[in-house]
Image (tube, rainbow, N blue to C red; front, side):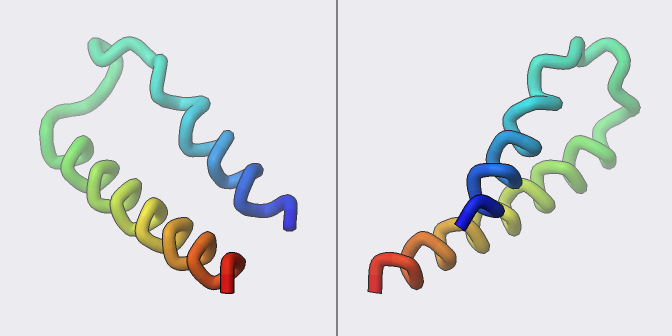
Length: 51
C-alpha cells in the first residue's frame, strides 16, 4: 500500500509556501475543509488496514 504515504507527502509538501502569496480567506477555508476530509479518509483507511 504505497498510496497513503504518497498522498500524505502531497499534503505536507505545499504547506511551507509563504502565506503572502495566498488568496483571501475563502480559499483557506476550502483548503482546510479539503484537508479535513482527506485526513478523515486517511484515518478510515488506517483503521481498515488494522482490521
